[in-house]
Each structure stands twice: as C-alpha cells, then as structure tokens.
Image 1 (cartoon, protein in one colour):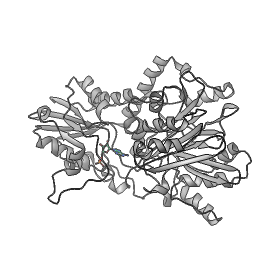
Image 2 (cartoon, protein in one colour):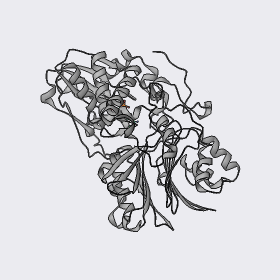
Image 3 (cartoon, helix red, strand yellow):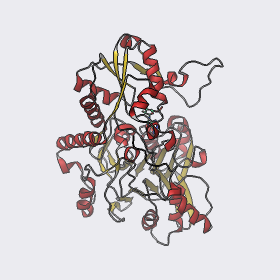
Image 4 (cartoon, rainbow, N blue to C red):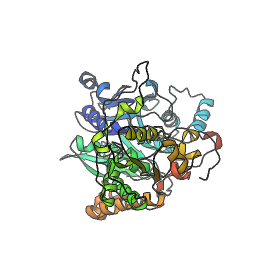
Length: 494
Ligand code: AMP
C-alpha cells in the first residue's frame, strides 16, 4: 500500500505536498519522497521514515518549484530499502520524468525480464521502475502518449502520478483498483491530486471528483484535459480499502468509509448477534464497525482496549520475556470495562491470527468472563497481488483452517465473520446514502466537458460486481501465470 499526492502551479508546491503526504501517512510509513519542478528542472528528495522525519524545513526549502508530486510507501513489491523509495525520477532522451505509484503490477516480472534481455539496467527491485523503463523506451513522441503506451503494456493496479518539467499527469488503472481523487485549492484553480481526500482537508482544498477507472488527467500550461486511452473493462475497485486501508474520514468513489464501516458492524450484529454486556473495538481499525454493532444490537459500546500511537518498528525486549510483549506495546486492556463481563470484540480482519489470539488472552487476563470475536469481513484466504501487504497463502490462517478451528486457535468463546454479500451491500448502502446527500450526478463535475459523459458512465458504475474481493474469494480480476503467483495452493473448502 502507498499514498500519492500531486500539485500543479503553486509557489509552495513542495510544502503543500509535504502536508498532503502527512495526511496519507496511514497508507505507508516506510519511506517518503517529493519531487518538485520549477518549470525547467526536477528536484528529488526521499528517505526512509515518516513524512515529518524525512522532511525538515531546510530540506523542503531545497525543493523549490511550482509543481510537485510525492509518495509514502508501505513495501509490497520490491522489499524495504531506500533504493525502492519513491518517487522514481529519471533523465531520458526526451527530458526528465518522475513517477509516484500506488498499486502492484501483476506482470512486472515478465516485463522486467523482457526489458533486461533487451539491455535495460534496473536500479531498484520495485515494479514501478518497469513503468519508467517502458515510458523511456516508447516510440511515441509526446510524453502523454509514451505514458499511455507504457501503461497499455502493464497489468494490475496503478494509481499513478507523473511529473515532467511542466506537466502533471495522473492515471488510474482501467479496473480502478486503487483510489485517486482530484481537488482544487480553495478559491483558486490550482489542481491537487491525492490517493484520499484526507490530504485536501489539511491543505484547504475542495474535493472535485474521483479520477475514473482508466482515466488519464493531464495538467499542463494549457489547462486540464481528461482522456480515456485504454480499452474499457468492467471496474474492480478494491473493497478492502473500505474495510481497513482508507482513513474513515475519506469518501472514495462516492462511499463514505466511516459509514461503510458502521454498516459492516450493523450487518455483523444482525448476522451474528450474541448476548453480551459490552461491545469493544480493536482500536483503531475496528472502531467504526463496533459503533455500528453497538447501535444495531443495543449492547453498550465501551473502550476495552487502549492503543498506543507511539510504537516504532523495532523495540528491544528484555531478556526475561514479557507476556504478549509485541501486542502489549500497541494495546492495553481497560480492566474496569472488562472485569466479570461478557465481551464482544470487533476487528476488521484476521490475517495470521496471532494478534487475535493475543488480544483474547489479554481480555481474559483482565477479567472478561466471555469473549466473542466478530470480524467485519469474510475469512482472508488469499494473498493480494494489487498492493495490499499480505503474507503468503500458507501463512493466512483462514486458508488452512475452518472458522471453528480458528475460534479454537484464538481461544475465543465464539468467532464469526461477515459474509461477502453483506460486505458488498454494506459498502453499496453507504454509497447510496452519500449520493442522496450529494444529490447524484452533481457530485462529479468535470473540467473537460468532452469526456464528461464517459466519466460519468465509468465513475458512477459502482455495483455489486464492481469490487475486487480476491483476498476473500480468490476471484482475481487479473489472471496470473502460475509462476507469477506468490504461492500455488489448491483451493480449500472449509
Ligand atoms: P494477524 O495477527 O496477522 O491476524 O493481524 C490481524 C490484524 O492486522 C488486524 O487487527 C487487522 O486490523 C490488521 N491488518 C489487516 N490487514 C493488514 C495489512 N494489510 N497490513 C497491516 N495490518 C493489517
């Protein structure tokens, strides 16, 4: 997972990019980078760590310019290293170009081999560099055509920002897997682009609209143009964004993430109600679903776990080991809420099962009489190849265990997951109510009337079939060659 941000035509472009990235920090904490342009030259700085640590003020002063793109990274493809930090910037025969990418390409290995066989020398192990080489090698003349040519050859997920000396180009893949939003600095015509509108809120920008699947937005001295250079396909927007990844104050593709999550909790309460004294979230990701669960069931919402927000990557553990050390650094039980109580605990997902097991133990140690685990999504059985960091299939507990076996492993009294149908309906219900509030089509004004009709058709087509839910169903929208999959395991019916 990653976050991207772009701004065009502002004297403090790099500083606004810095703030925009800070509001996307939840999408990646490993490295951060900004490329600026003064109209003639690109300047790049990137480093490992959080936005606030990577960019002291002196560093931002160096990034002079009026246009900028930035990136926060959560390593999925390519491993964790400074050389894989983004944006990637190159000089090639037509000038300079920087690229910031959210998503994962599924045919990157095959393309990379082809490019290397033809003499390309790669600097990084990240799939994004494949796009850069394809752009540099393209036979097209205009940079926009080179980008379209390159992207026409890649498969998988990309929400992409490209910066040249004097233009900013934003592209969302035809499946619309990862989000990408267009905004405008309030009271100006300065366009801003971001993975989520959380960036706009911080820099006083207004949300204009989502970039549509397959759309390419070109911002240049001539203004903003919208193109659809790829063959249209049915959209498959990642539904996990609504469950876990996006920030709850975001509205993506017309869906309020907060409302979608509350709906998940409501559905869980309807489908898997249980007699209990309190319902508590696993903070922070489980909070909105727990509010929904509490509202629907009438069971009081309480904080039974408190989260520390100051956990770094590595902690030194004393030699004499401390029980549940890892999880205790992050979460701590509230005895008053738990002692002698029948507790429902709501989380968004179980991946390996280790966190849930430790949480259940922690709740029991704090005096909970019963612990009922409720998960606001279906069992995670399949790895993601489109940009969410998931382990290999054999490490996903639901790939090899039934729900009852997982219940025994995590030692809860009962365990229940949401069905995929309920999940889709919860998200679509949130979209319906948002559209009603925003008065339908007027939520999507376009700078370019020529592509308005196409945009509306594509952007508003979120239906039951327009989600990618491969992590639960194994139904991957981009098919793989067997060697391209992280691991081949037969489908297990539990
Ligand atoms: P696990 O111990 O592997 O079962 O981890 C489950 C926890 O990880 C849940 O509390 C989720 O909120 C969280 N989680 C789910 N997906 C991801 C992800 N892709 N990256 C980081 N955390 C995740």
